[in-house]
Amino acid sequence: MRKRSRKRAFVLTEKHKLAAQIFAQGDFVTMQEVADRVGVHRSTLWRWLQHREFQRYCERARCAAVAEAMKDIEREAREMRREILRKEREWEKQKRREKKAENVRWLIEHGAPEEAIREYVGKKKSEKKRFR
Image (cartoon, rainbow, N blue to C red):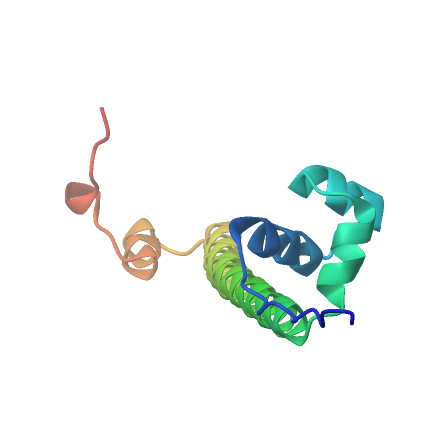
């Protein structure tokens, strides 16, 4: 009489975890490339994929990779938004300077007294800072 073989319990090893991480990265590598990176034969990798425990681990790894990618995207979006707001403030500040300079030119062209121009600019000669 033939002896019945028992199925062994599937235990995740470091090689299983590495394969799952490679799958989760989404680099669209072939099964042979994954098997080569992990150091197993392609058929072994296919056998692993038949186990529910390995499938679940792969799915968890994929979800974790997606969550991490989303965090990166959100962080980059926040940084981009800050940069856009900073550029807008700089642009508005430059526009105000240009408008003020235009107004000063108009005052000069129309013969406004020097004291009125200084008052419009907001600084008297004695209040100007010297940069040396």
